[in-house]
Figure (cartoon, rainbow, N blue to C red):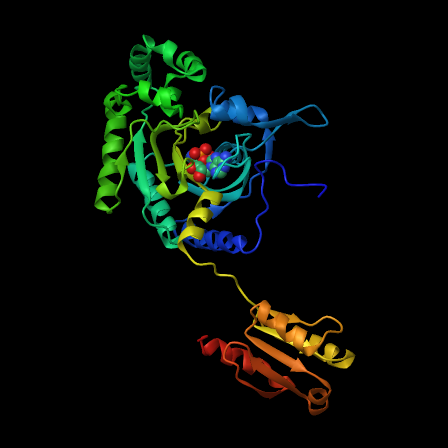
Length: 422
Ligand code: HAM
């Protein structure tokens, strides 16, 4: 083989693609019911956009971006996530002038130069949602409940919802100081990344995955003990609505998230079936970002679902559902092949998936092929059938067979739909 896909990048093919399509169509239907409308965002943006929003001290900006100069020497980055582009889009098109809130979703590939492993890719796909304009806790609750419904509707169970509030500009400085004091005297024992995080953004230490750092941060002050009155009230109201609506969640004060733009609510959905990369979806509030991008003060909240992880979970729990053609048209001879082609086109125009024979092949091999591709029916046209203006049909599941007038062939197909397979 001369070429293979790049490391951490994969082809998504049948039969897996059918799971992906099922996820996408269920997700679309549910998101529409909550008033989210699709936007298609560019895959390339200026590098500055991600630095300003995700933050210079984040792992994504620091180590993981696919950044390159274009031919005019502008610094371009393959998007590592969708929120920054969604905010740019909101500000650029003055969407604040429209009815509030403005609710959007997007689906597509993201790129992060991470160390590939199970559930972690360099090109991966997200379905993301963003709601602009409401600071109310009920908006947070709506998103979390919508995410739960979406995942359950797709077929997932046994998911854990973790939730936290990381406060706002008013209360976070006190919390940062408490963390600096807590980590200060044992700083030398942390990993080199955490030592750097200590001086640039101590909250990041809570997100470190190194076992030693996890041990060392036991007993660290909890962000929720430092919330100002407004953030506390917002968080309590959100938790109250979730409880009222029967959402089971766990509070996780270490859930600070790896992107700098978050304020107040953060949340993550995890599954123990996924191994080390167990977050299926994650998100939170980012009430400052629209303003930082030059727009009016606009609260916002969103989340993104990781498609590869969701598809892996679904594959584990639900049997493969590979679609199959309704009919295979077997033909013997040039004239029959032409007639078969005409019938195939007529049936396809009526909405059926039809496969046909190409060129010379024995009837036996054609029927074997029809079986192998799991067609419901074989329609057979030979010289006799041509003369009589009829088609021989054979139900490949029940083994029933018969003859039907050429211009009435569709009735055989629709009868099969009504009689389920044994
Ligand atoms: P994130 O936590 O970086 O958040 O990514 C969201 C989800 O994308 C993760 O929970 C995971 O399922 C999936 N994911 C992330 N990185 C990878 C990877 N390398 N391979 C496979 N899957 C991955 C965001 O991206 C935010 N933009 C979410 C958000 C939207 N917050 C507010 N609005």
